[in-house]
Length: 588
Image 1 (cartoon, one colour):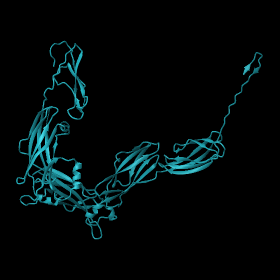
Image 2 (cartoon, one colour):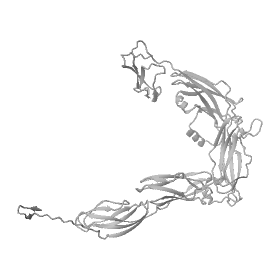
Image 3 (cartoon, helix red, strand yellow):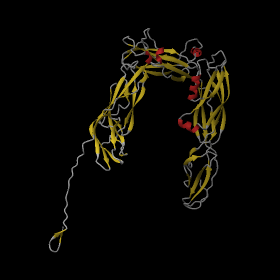
Image 4 (cartoon, helix red, strand yellow):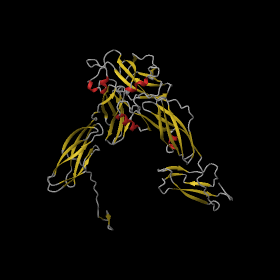
């Protein structure tokens, strides 16, 4: 407002405040959708452009569980189907909208009545496992939502299915991640029986997340061999743990049988007096009709006493019957696995007892040699070769035909497995011995493995005395002063083990060179550089230092690094001299 000099008013401005309340028009359509959480469903909406020009639409989705294109362009007179993906994260009902806003024109929208249900139960693949063993299974928890899930777990059958995460009160699954939950299946009956469970994960968002698991109990196959090794004439006891895997009271009988992969080797169980010498025996007072409660445990002590240098083999058989005398219930015999062929059954196919077989292998070790222990001495950074002769005593030559004697370096486990798979049960035509060097510890192995080598020079057997003479050439090239005892181990797969300790002594090395460094003044450094390479074909790490007692004026850089192979440029090492006080003469 403006007032002139005459007192009159001119140029008056007036403001008006308008409050506009707009409400959306009714929805074009109401769409009802039901979907399980963690799933995704597509919602189809038909759109038409009745005009003769392009229609540009902005799309607004009112909830994070909805996803789709944010803009659309419809050609004149075009019909399209717009798809909205609904991925519910939380169980419940809600009303949401899909709003279409044209650049020119009136907006329109669709009302979505959404119902999110609990996740659909997941049925895991059926698991098969020998009775008495366990087999793992993984439950994948795929959280495709943007929610952090704090899960508590319930298990309807903890007897047969054991969760390894039971110790944790809650399980956290981060948004858009997968957590694997391991489950162990312990069969307690043959066939399917009641070996099913429902593992339920509870949380606020999903309420219940259910996984159904089931398993089949198989007739047990022979277990992995138990290997026992002890010296001739000494005894060694090993415990075979057995557990009644069923939920019934049972009676257990334990049997010990001589088993030989090669029938011709069975004569090794007869000593010079003709007395049967199996090598294995039980120390239990009762071996028949031992009562065991459900899930009860029984420790079976087996004693091994070798008398000759020959591989001993036996089989511990644990036979389990129901205490009430009834047959073992089971489903279709076709589902009990290959172990059914070795099971004792009645004429009607009923199973009287269940057997577990534990193969035993006894490896005799020859007594320590009575001769003087060999010793090899060498200066560090030098090389020496020594001839070492060893005598394998107590060798049993028991075949009427002559077998070829073969002595070779120890093979890798893979090579041994391939040979055993390819070999038949016929008597081996080659009397094979394998040798290797064993070290006192892993640390000694890392220090000495590249410094020691041996190869066979000659071999000779004396069938009458039962011994084999082997002559080796041992190469010792130590890199630093050290003292250790290595063991030359010789083993025959059908005989036993012979061990021969050898002492290795590496003394102080000779001086390689004399380095003269001339000082140039107080507190000034002078240095001498020289190039070093590895003594092998491979790079080797090093540490450099002056021996204790050296003057403090000397130091070396770098103090650690890696020496390159001889064919390379090498590594430059520098020795420094720095005078801290005025002195004349030689400093060492």
